[in-house]
Image (cartoon, rainbow, N blue to C red):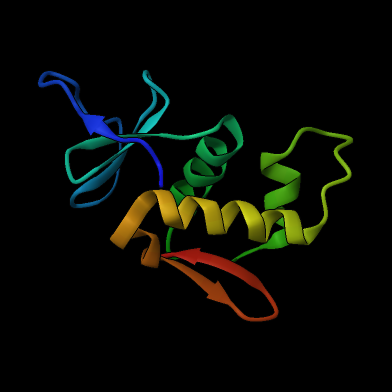
Length: 108
């Protein structure tokens, strides 16, 4: 289970994804229903990329190219593992990350 804590008032959302869910770029956390959920560096970058490209299908190789450092020999299964962990941390909002069988993912 991921740790979460209430967000102090005065922190403004930077990238609004859906009501009740956004990224705070200054703190590098996801705020889910008013609770801060700490993310790893890669989870944060992955979620930020999905938000920037919401409602667009993104392939696993595209995610590797855009989110992982150059020269990383990450396989497509690595993306799947990170998405799974991200979904758990986002709770009910994790369902917004749709798996597109044989293609990749889409944030709705």
